[in-house]
Image (tube, rainbow, N blue to C red; front, side, top):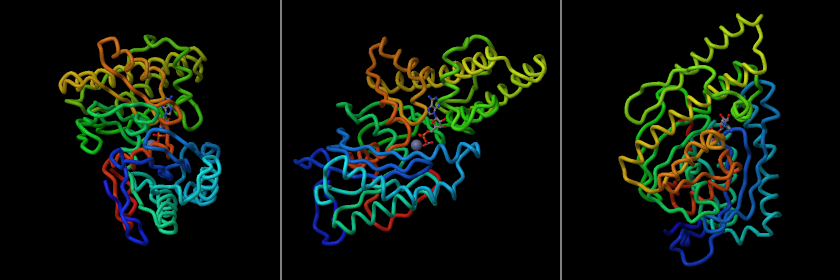
Length: 350
Ligand code: KG4
Ligand code: ZN
């Protein structure tokens, strides 16, 4: 595809058909990570810099948008400089500059998106705006030869979707959560049992030492490819309350691990079941998972079991599951529903 340089308006070919090596610099700042990356031809990471704000938000038990935006301001120039110095590339070597447009926290998105637009303007290169959810899916192209069509399960802090990816740019959402996202459910349940933010990875770790059959929790019966996790969350709340009452107001270490394992079993079973159904119905041979929760050990294990039935399964390595800018660069290269207009504005919801 052809994209316009912002200042001179000369056109540049970008993407798999461009006929030369593309180096895309991308910026991601939709939530609590300030990230900058340079990716060659959509698949080879040359630099991947992530400044995490977890330490800041930990004490509040969640992300405070205004504080996050200010921290992005402090970190943005540093991550861009680090990406250049790590790669040994100069701005003139960059084919295009990309940035996340949304969904995300508006104040946070503004910082990264304006940085990407400014870099493109100053260095007279094309600007490519990227959708954060599409970028998560594109993390699967990094270090692989994966090409659509495939079925995708996108599970993050804000979204839970089954997506039919017919081509790089044609995607159809088959179903999504009608209430909490999987990551949100993980973080809420983690908080309930006293784990610090973000609770998902910590809950996952404890679950691996617990008995997944210890407590029976309800599997939601939502139609088609949609999900619901709020009932499960309430069931865990009741269970924890009951166990505490029986145990002088405290959960034993074993009980904590068993609650985590039982919750994780219920979530992973539900996700795997619906994904398998979608795969069978569309007749695809490939399936991918993406988003922060795709880093979860049990969800990965259950989805990789599909390989036994002859499916090709792909999941990004851990650091490309959670928010990063390499996935944004890959999304820009493959032109996955991108925004070319320099005037594109950030948006908070999908
Ligand atoms: O994709 P992401 O980095 O940010 C969003 O776009 O939302 O996802 C963050 C979410 C958080 O809810 C976090 O608790 C969850 O991913 N997460 C996990 C694991 N690692 C990250 N949840 C369960 N198990 C994990 N190992
Ligand atoms: Zn994300």
